[in-house]
Length: 503
Image (cartoon, rainbow, N blue to C red; front, top):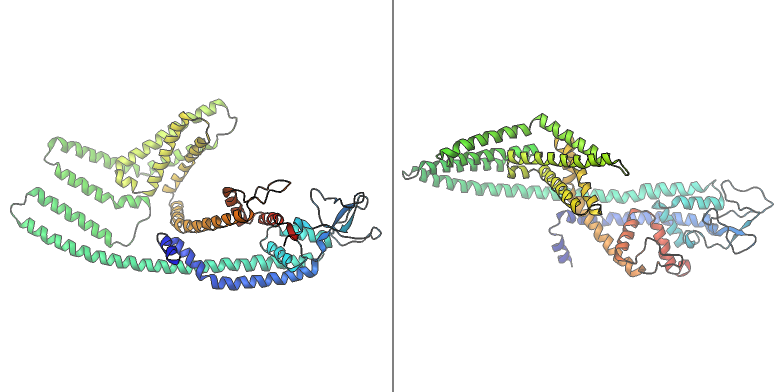
């Protein structure tokens, strides 16, 4: 099994870092878990002393002794006093003596699960408070039953010590171990990269030295033509440029620098092409004029004026998308319809002149240019799709792609571009963590279907969070992980197994 897991994780180094960090953090996490368990037991014992049986009193009707009179829409604990005694604790809930009376017999809040009647239910209630899900409701119920004079003395330290301090220790340990493991992996990768670089340089130096000696022999021969000699010199020049780039250890990050990296190589190829056709007089003048025109276009697309024109177009396109609203006038609908075609044509024209000026290979080496091309292709597909299926949900999704054009700002805004690049560089670690989270959700969704599949069908109805089907089980587990109403799922699970009396 260990070998199978290693083979499965081999192509996922980011996931390996996450798993190794969690494994190495198990020992300190176990110690923190014991500390949290100790705190839960202590607060559970204190709660057992303070609130044992306090949440089983509620208001019963005077006409029907078995009918509970709710406060609003749900039952609530009450303070049992005498009708002759007018004094009661501050904040306690007092039944209306004209229609009801406070007495014991109620099972308690949440089917009797939320209580301090024994150590196990007390620990469960304390754990719920530590997770900060529904702890205020428990506080208000104890206030209703006993008054609010001293309850805060119990709940405030419970939240501060249990939630703010102890649970955050878990995140601190995981974060520290992950940082250590990532630093170790990065150092090892940097060492292997340098070693491979040095080995490649040695092999390349030997290969180039052998090639140079062979070329010297060829150049010394009288039968070698001028064109062959020029081709050899051109190959030497290109090899020297590649060696220079190979020895450079600093990789440029922005798109303009990426384009400049390959610009010299593009001109070198053009020079070689010019050499090949120099004896073709009819083509020489055409290619010379075309090269000058392409160089002119390249300078234009890099000017500040072109930059501001693109920015203004993106801004106006975003405004046109934002002003669209429900029940709008027909003239606005027509205007936005034709404006979208105009903006799409302008952006296509921008892409085409960049492709022509820089060349397809240089253009698509830029990640932002590839992203821009995908957005434009999606917009073109939207236009075609809208002519076939008007008003479909898929069309609405495609129209949302137009909003991605606003990211063109990042290409020209250096600080925002660096932020986006940093975010994209961290995506590999985030994706590994999300994949691990998905496996966790998948396992517990299948386990939930085995334990609770079909048992949440209560007489009053089936709750939205259940384990009846696989997709809903995945969503239920995800809801529990977010901490939102996880206790409601727990209450339904306990109630489905005959409640607090089912063992």
